[in-house]
Length: 359
Image (cartoon, rainbow, N blue to C red):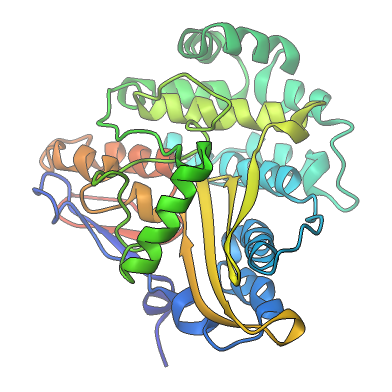
């Protein structure tokens, strides 16, 4: 029987090592292995089960890609906003309390229990009051207006003076999280049909492309800080934490349904591509079909997820790891903050650092 790590993949992190040793390990390409030969209409359920952490986005993209390949323009389920909001909440309420500073948090579990969209009968109706009381300490509209005027300064001002548990935790890690990080160009391939067609051609031409993707021969990075709707550049782990918090606020407030973009394109008869801006960044599905209608089966399936861009052996995270000093007493914390900022969807292991922790 295969181990969980063999099934899901595991990243191996070695701070201070030159690339590619600084970051290694790949997820198995289960989409390509499992989808071929199956009925096209079964693809959303299959990929939703394989990619369980972000199953809603994979279901949506799979359905849209199959519809595009078959020339259909059927409406898609309106799940992207709500599920992305919940994913951001899970990361902030479950992961951040332990990652941002040592010791448990009594306030984060209380916030989790009281969160309207994480309870049965989920609704965003009371999210503004919840965010003000449990996360921000000020009205969300006020917080967001300041952030949109000057993202980095507004976030730092709120964090440094805020009295909520979240502001205090972010303040505790600020000295390390504010350090500049190496960055790759933002992934904006979905800004045009031309870019998407070029991406589809690369996936068809090279079976290994989805494991080591490139744009114009170079790495790129993707996340909630690289949305098409945004222009600010992320320079540090703090900038990426701020982007996640700001997107949570945007999604929870009225008008949040317009925040995330998605789309599909029919490339040829029997060939379709779909994309969606999800919690961890840009997700792309590309399919080739054999047959028509209900008899169509999957001839090829390519899934390009954010983790493959961000955790490439030559990408931004690897470049940041390469510059760390494994003998420094704060190295383990720096690794934790870096990985939390980019948020891989697989487990990671750290080598060569004393008392290194891992997610």
